[in-house]
Length: 228
Image (cartoon, rainbow, N blue to C red; front, side, top):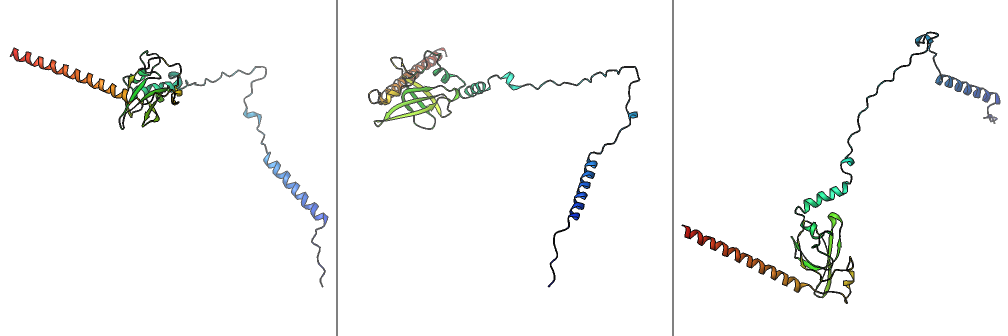
């Protein structure tokens, strides 16, 4: 049988390999740090005994800052809300109806009637007024078939055609939210009879106004006939 050869190399072979790797490292380091000396003849040096002249600084053109929109509109959210309210309520009737500064404004405890463009009108006692700019809303409570119903309405909503005050409260409410009216002891109940009486009075006033206009028109026609 053949004797197996030893796979390990002698120690002198490893020493020679380490020397080669060190030499290669030195060569790469010298290549990367190579620097070429520049002769001094290329630089203009001041003559001996004379100080160097100071060079004047170059003028850099400075452009003005662009106009910032916040300078014109300090409170952009309020300006946006005012624009939206002016678009949704150009006359300002709804704003004045729920304004705190208006003495004849609708208050908590009044009976309001909300007319909608695409639905039946809803009337009830106003138990809460939430003033949030464009999102200002009112909470009305009424009884339908002996069941308490509450509805939130946005006063600036395009679906709301109009808001009318049916009856004002006799006394000023001492609370901003009349949530205690949900209890049977303080519940007003149905306001349908009050709304019907209000609508009848409105229709009667309209009918009398139309009759007066008709009489005035007839008198004018008779006068014109006499002149002819």
